[in-house]
Image (cartoon, rainbow, N blue to C red):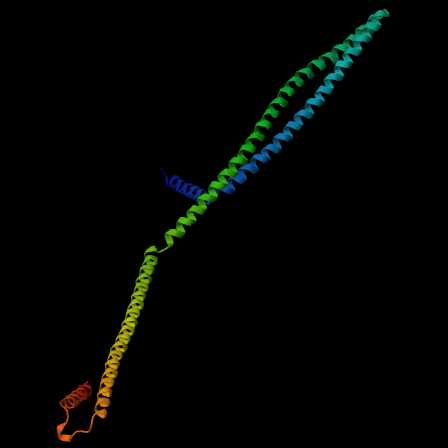
Length: 256
């Protein structure tokens, strides 16, 4: 293989590849339908011309037929009058028109066949164009769907799902930490409240006991006042015990 052939093949391969890549199904189908419609216009014009030619041929055929019939009648008239020469001349004219009519009849039959063929081709082309338009719309819809699907897949493929999921995991962990902190604060707040109530209850018990003790002492003082005065040296042992108990209580309270 020569160098020129190799270069030519490479060039044609590159051109075909560029053309293949540049082909847009929608545009190609639109152009194909336009080309078919142009063919349809040309075919209609051809049918119209063939029909016009057929009509002219038919008119000429009918005219020659009438002329031949007319010269036939003239020949009969001349012969009836005994003029054979005139009758022969009329028959000669009649034969000329009859021959022309016969030739025109052959052309007319051929043209009629051509017109019928063109009409059938016209109908077939119209049917193909209608089918092509329907198929074009269907392929266009499929092409658009394929483009949308490709774009969607490219968009999805370009998303970094690992980074997105990592962000969700970090936020979930942060929310869990916030929930734990909130629960801890609630528990600590509840413990302090319970401790305060416990202290209140404890102090309330001491106050009650102190009030009872005061009432007891007040009762003892009344009893002592109602009795006659005794000698200082002869104090009751009960008073001594109460004083000792009070002194011990004061000492414990001071220690606390």
